[in-house]
Image 1 (cartoon, rainbow, N blue to C red):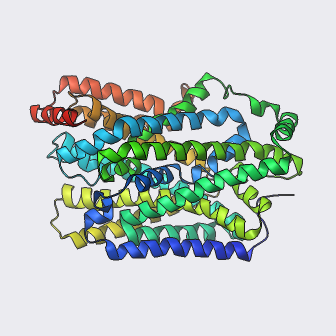
Image 2 (spheres, rainbow, N blue to C red):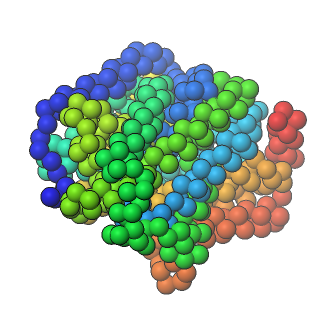
Image 3 (cartoon, rainbow, N blue to C red):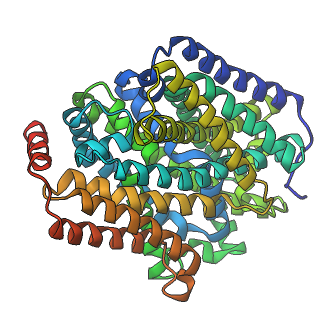
Amino acid sequence: MNLQSVELSYPIIVTFITYAFLMLFIGFYFYKKNQNSKDYFLGNASMGPVVSALSAGASDMSSWLLMAFPGALYAAGLGQIYIAIGLSFGMFLNWTFVAKRLKIFSQIAKECITIPDFFESRFHDDKHILRSICAIVILVFFTIYISAGLVSGAKLFESVFNLSYTLALSIGFLVIVLYTFLGGYKAVCWTDMIQGLLMMSSLIIIPFVMIFELGGFGEAFSTINNVKPQAFGLDGGGWIVVISTLAWGLGYFGQPHILIRFISIKNVKEIPTATFIGITWMVVSLFGAAMIGFLGIAYVAKFNLTLNDPERIFIVMSQMLFNPWVAGILLSAILAAIMSTASSQLLVCASSLAQDFYTQILKRKTDDNKITLLSRLAVLMVALVAFLLSLDTQSQILSIVSYAWAGFGASFGSVVLFSLFYKNMSKEGAIAGMISGALTVIFYKNFGSNFIKIYEIIPGFLVASCFIIVFSLIFKAKKHTIKHYEKMLKEV
């Protein structure tokens, strides 16, 4: 039996439509609540620990968690588990060491509502050089990242509703853009919380049912050993591959849509609670996703099924193991993952174009309502470009996500870490690090196969770090920049 698509199910259609309207209702509700651009971009910095933690997790993981990661385990076995280990460790370090300092520093430097705001204030860059570079990096890599979400949505609607790829892509595009366009940051955070809980629930329920259907762990592992014994290998394909997969954790320090959650949390006292909630959610969700992919090897073999695209294993298990109403709810988790991440990324792009580029770099004077309107138009523009990038039916989610993840991790991640832990870091060091990190990732992604075949975030991060140190030694940090850093240390 071929599992690329299934028979059209009206209960699933009803469930999907209901879920989509619920998300749009939340977007419309907060459309009425948003009174200024700070509301739209940052939720007025009033998010509690539960909303902040689950929102950060949901916007971080995206459809990658439910489609690409299980697909990687299904295709290559347990060796891919190092991605989960690297991500879990990276997220823990991010919440533990970055969150508090970033929150405090963003308040000391000035009232920041975007990550470029923070960089500019941290280094007193009155010429807006850092802000300009940030805007370019954000637009390039987030447009790529958003296209991964649209590809996921296309695969979901294509499989569930037997639609053409282009029509499926268009539907996902309209849903995501509409509720981001309306609601802004509060809508994104609250829907992310709902979507995060839905995602985790699905990743707990499906593996349990799979184990039952397969006759227990022993029977499942025996089947896997018979049909694909190499799936148990933990070498990951060699030390270079293992290092590359673990290095995914480096990306956390540079993701604007995650870092902004640290700035928007109410106060630093709530960060430990948010850390515990966020890490728990992540570990449980990653374990469930890994089990779906790994047990999928046994399920497909035992029931003589055919699965041409490993990234659809979650979709297949949801449809085959549950009645259509339950399957519709579980499959809504993929829509949830897509919407949570793409909307967060669209919002960052919008803030970059409207708040950073238009009002700060071009120095256009305008009122708050116009900034919010421009931001909504920016959402539409970036989404349209991502839509065009997603039209390739051969696109693979994991490949797209890994590229964008590396770009931010190397360019922003290195600068964020040094800016929070290196007192003598200068503006010139930040500029050099951001540019060199981004360019190294782009170069290594396209030509790295001529050298060591390692994940491009590693050379990108190392090169950026070296440039930051060297340029900070050559061009000394200003005294008032150092004073701000020392003030932050007193409050940590």
